[in-house]
Length: 200
Length: 386
View 1 (cartoon, rainbow over the protein chains, first blue to last red):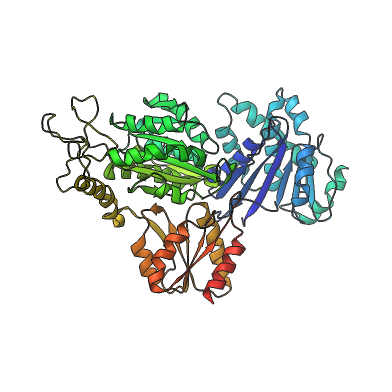
View 2: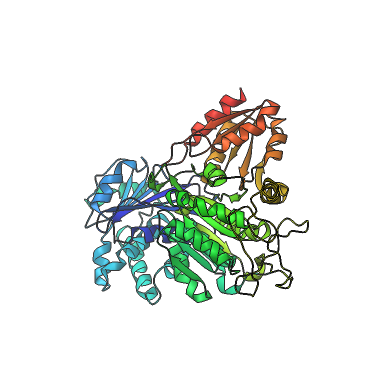
């Protein structure tokens, strides 16, 4: 993996920072590569826009901040609006389908998941971010699925592992159902065709 | 001596620099922390205050930073490894008692997670502008040791060095972190306790009747007696003799102060640690520390792509300054390039050491609130190579 830059946004309380932490941990600890996670330390109170970034690479990460993400995860409309223009021209947008209504941009691929509704169907809306992580793992393939599951297991509060892994698997499965054959890792062209328009 | 397993969280972790700092302190045997919360250092004491009860440590949230540093000095005299953690504004308030610790030869560690200044400046954003304060912040002549980590892993590792150096030289050791390293999360490997070498507090073998707290017998530091062990002695910030009693004379002043300086100055080569890359044959050598060292390496690579012969020296130990090494390198290079997140602090030391050989010292300043654009460092290197 050459240097891959990821930004995750949402509102405070959605688990934005934990999502960045789990991605970074999966890459650096469970997949044996390098990942530096930074989080916004502004005056974000619960409910306002919040952001975390991960710089992941096969090699040592020297520059800790990101400029233009390759992958942009938007869990709230506010976060999407704030950072959408930063996404690389050929970047991947991953978004909460019921909360974010993205404007399609040529060259960029977009993948939506109703992560809040899926989490609610599992009985706890708080695992929305983990549903999103499962979906993220399936879309990007940035680390093997098991590495990401290991990172989830090691990062959530004791006693909640089962619920969180169920949430992760639900998000992963959603991608496989909705975007089968559109995996950007395998079929670039199909994936491009299944961009934002497919979900309009 | 090996580390106490109770304080060592062996394993492969994903930690921010502040948490790694706390883990390093606990692994090093620190069992007393007094502090006053301040961004961006608070996570260090949050971590420690949660974990200390498991290993018999004591954390006190003090009324302010003056009290924090005073408590650390007092706790160290019970033989407990002690530290405080702060950022710029708190560091300023600690200066008086850092001087007291230096004068009383009290082993202790002070962590400064630097943010933008002056005054309350930029609480949540990075700076490296307390570097000269670390060296000269308290009044009078004294020496300290200061270290600067570039990653959470190195923060963990250097905390162990810091506590060990504090014991060997009986000085305050300052760990000059920065907000970027403090708030960045990366992989941190914590080894098993039996792989961590610890310098314990060495207690005097003298009986209380003949013990003199500041008698050195040709050694760099005097023997230590803990408060509470039946040794009745005096220690003070006033100029003192071997008994620890104040003596107001220039002869005693010379003896007392010169030893405070010499115990560090005569051991610079034993204390200083540098990371060097491709210094031999270089026209320009970049000197950097902390987060800026990582960013500077990108600048070095960019300049090499344009044909420049560039070396790199990272200051792991920032104080005492590696005079001898910089002077030697100055003989062979055209210039040093020194990027730092301030308007010129460590560059003054480089300039001092480079002057005799006629090498330039070029500052690449940054006001704080972010890190350098590596392209600016590259441009400075190319400019200095001409």
